[in-house]
Amino acid sequence: MLQPKQYKVLLFLIIVCIISRLPQLLGHELLLDGDECVVAVMAKHILAHKDFPLYFYGQAYGFSLVECLFIIPFYWVLGITTVAVKLGMLSLWTIGVVFLYKTFVLINKSHKWLPLLFILIFICSPAWAIWSIKARGGYLTSFTLTSILFYILFLDKKSYAVYIWSGVLCAVIYQSQPLWLPCIAPFLAYFLFKDRKAARVLLFLLPALALSVAAYFYRQRLSNFGIIQLDFTTNGLGERITRIPRFLYYSLHGNYYFDERQSPNFFCAFFAILFSAIIAALPCIAIYNVITGKRGVRLFNLSALGILPILAYTMLSMGFQCRYLLPITGYTLICLLLWINTVTIRKRFLYTASIFFIVPGIIAVITFYNFAFSALREKSLRDTLGFITQTGAHYSYCYDNMFTWQVIFYSNEQVLCHEQRMPGRYPEYARKVDSAFYNGGTVVYISPPIPLPKIDFPKDTTVNGYTIVINPPKDVIEKNFQRIAVGL
Image (cartoon, rainbow, N blue to C red):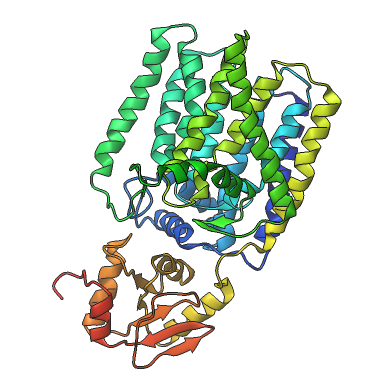
């Protein structure tokens, strides 16, 4: 049982998680991107008993059910809204934060306030400013389940159930986002094999393998519209190795969207540089420990050296997909706390150093209140979709696959959209659009106010910056959009 003071700390952390994200939640730039809209629609389908998807639509990976289930209670209260989706994700992330803090408490053998300071560093890290409220097919699920896994692994007294649940959690984490597995591996290796008890390994493997096999057969019927794009060749290997420090820096300052990047402000950059220095130092300390034969530091050495493969798998990325390094922030803080347990450092120095991270981190997170990579805004988008429905059109074609899902979600599925790439994430909708268009129904083409390949139409209309073509010519649509409706 937690002591009353610990309950107060957990309540404090929950409040900090919420308050630190209020600038974004209340900002005028708040908008779900296309992939977030997919998760939002999935949750809506579950709520309406229309579908019960386990994985991100159009993919055989990205276990997203947990994220959907966290969104649904907020749909009940707030309706199908952007804020409901974001609050669902913030709730899931906050649970992960709580368990990460509880893990810090179990690890800490130094000063009693250190776990609280470390979790505040994590909460205020710009790397998580956007991602703490982003629905994106398994990232937050993996973070939260990994935090729970760390907590049960560091318990002093472990029943056999701990190893069973470890296997279950690892299987779900892998199905959600395997990016977290390299973080888990050093700790699993240590706790499963340190006493050389085969029963522990067996209890871990049985549920992990059983769930993995079940997931494999389930995924065989899923679409492969979305695939993971990784580069396993040696082409440009030298450049991909030398880009690792930049990759890490971009990830830690948090000002990115896919592989697009913005220049960070001073506070985001300051935090990222300091944190990068710690990440670089920890493996060096572990290597020194190995060379000098220092005793009693095996777990720290394993974890610190585990930073290297986490950084190395960025070499497989096609471009700077900075989200691939999301796991490293919490992992580094665990490693750092393990190292502090092995040395003697004055309390004043530790607390002062923590403040050097927390203060700029707080300011950095607040500065994300106006974070945006697109000219789209929710009000203008909803107004434009309202214009479309007033014309009698409930079906549309769109060249941009991400915008497609923004149209579907923000119209509350009153305007279904045919994606440019086929078969699309949800082929049923493309079939309905084709069926309406080729059978004489009212259909529009819509293009957002962002750079896209231009399609030449004889006549178009501009509404709030969006290009709209009502009942576009059949020859133009046939040329640019593959028809998938059966029997047309």
